[in-house]
Length: 72
Image (tube, rainbow, N blue to C red; front, side, top):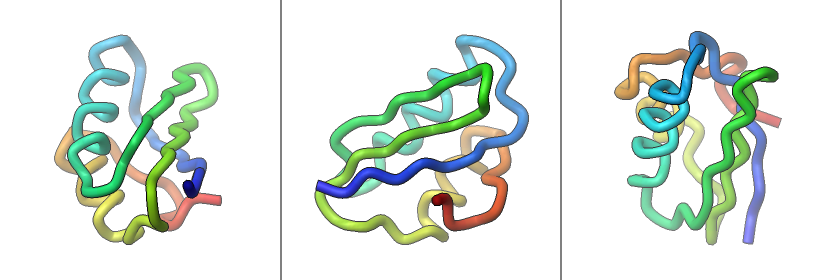
């Protein structure tokens, strides 16, 4: 399992959390998504490392912005 933390800009409420979680959960191999709203951090657990462009596209589809592109 691989765990990576991403910074997501623009989340302000529970709806934001749900939208981002839902889009990222749709990526192949994603097992868990945890969103910490106060810090704008999204922790993703997946079977294999995720393509940063795919994560950015999922966040964009939810209406938010992935900051830094590749996470930590």
